[in-house]
Each structure stands twice: as structure tokens, then as C-alpha cells.
Amino acid sequence: MQNFNPTNPVNPSRKARRFKAHVSTLGTTQLHLRNPFIIAWWSAAFPGFGHLLLSKYLRGYALFIWEIFVNNMANINQAMVFSFTGNIEMAKDVLDPRWTLMYIPVYIFAIWDSYRTTVDMNKVFLLAEREDAEFNSFVIGAAEINYLDKRRPLNAIVWSILTPGLGQLYIHRVITAIYTLIFMIVFVYFSKILVAIHLLFLGDISQATQVLDPQWLLFMPSHYGFAIYDSYVNTVENNKLYESEQRKYLKENYQQYRVKMPVSVDEVK
Image (cartoon, rainbow, N blue to C red; front, side, top):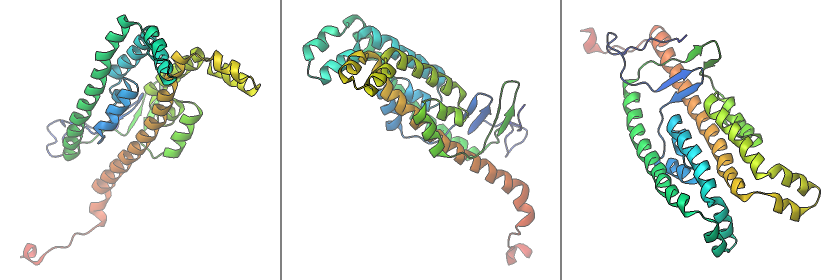
């Protein structure tokens, strides 16, 4: 059940061509201006993240799962740890060239495609903003209820810091929240970071270091940072969208009755 009629405000007989946003039971998808270099940087940090920031979920999670699978098969994170510690020869030995050479072109594609898509979507947003078509702000279904309202960006940050994925749940980005929570559990389990923290509390620092699996551990910083950034940015943009929708609604339904525009002498004649 939705609360809008998808028609063109200029020509009611014709449907609107572009919408700025869509509110569904799974979340709020919207167009807004983004910096292409920031999106490309997130794709470089972890392929798929740039596309997820653009709400390109199918493409984003395809690249995300590809990164985890091929990276593990090629032992890229393990090689990075050896190179960071100066063990260049061990880094060379641990890499599997069969998978490493497969990794490079898709990694470059993820960066290039996210940059290109951001530029295109910025153009579409400007056209949609100019058209200013109606969009739904409330939806109710058998599984969920979603609506536009204002929420605190700081709350999204705090919940994402406590557990990645909760910030997305706070702003009703259900798909991203589910995937973020699931893969956070996967990374925590296989990296054995909680076991290391337990040993650290017991004072056994050497054992805590040895128990960690660096191949899985290196996935976590990017995953953690993305959860915080994504929840913050989308909270801010959702607030802007809410204000825009409220402003347009009040202007169309109330302002014309309360505000009297001054009439010039020429118009009277």
C-alpha cells in the first residue's frame, strides 16, 4: 500500500519520467549527489562497497562475495600481512597466481564502474530534481512498515560502532543491514578475533597474536568503516529527503491559503 500517484505534476495525464526516491518495505532508495572519487575509493577498499553506497545491491553484493572468495583462494590478505612486516619472499610464496591474476581485472572494474555509475547517477538526480515528481513517503505491507522521518546521524554511527549493521537497521536499510550483520559474524568467527581478545584480557599477548587468522582479519577494517560511513551518509540524506517532501507538501496544500502574494499595479489594470 503506497500513498502517492505516479503522475507528472506538470501534465497529470502523463506519468512522471524520473523519481528522486522510492520507499519500500525493505528500505528507502534515493538519488542524491555523490562524490565519484569517494565512491571509487570505497570500491578500492573493498570491491562492492562503492556500488552498495549507490544502492546498486545486486552488482554490489556480487562483487562483495567475489572479493571474499577470490581473495581467500589467492591468499591476498595473507600476502599483504607478510609484505607489511617486510617478509617479501614469504608474500610471494603464499600467493596463488591462478587466482591472483583473476583477481586484478575484476578489482579494477569495480573501481572504474562505481566511478562511472556515480557520474551518471548524479546527472539523473539533477534531472529528477528538476522534474520534482511525487514519490511515496509511506508504505505498509504484510512484513514491514517504512516511512520517511528524521533520525539522528550520531545514533547511526554509535550503533554501527557497537555492531556493524545495526546503524543500517536504525534507518531501515534492511538488505544492507542483513548482509552486513551476516558477514560481520563470518569475519569475526573465522578471524578468531574474539578468542584473541579473550586471551588478551588474560594477559597472554603472544598467544592472542598467534591465534588470529590474518587472512580473515584484514576484511574487518573495511567492513567496519563501511558500516559506519554508509549508515551516517544515508541518515543525513534521508533527513534531507524528508525535509524536501515535507516542504513540498506544506507548500502545495497550505501555503496558497495563508500567504497572499502582492499584486502589482500593472496586473490590476
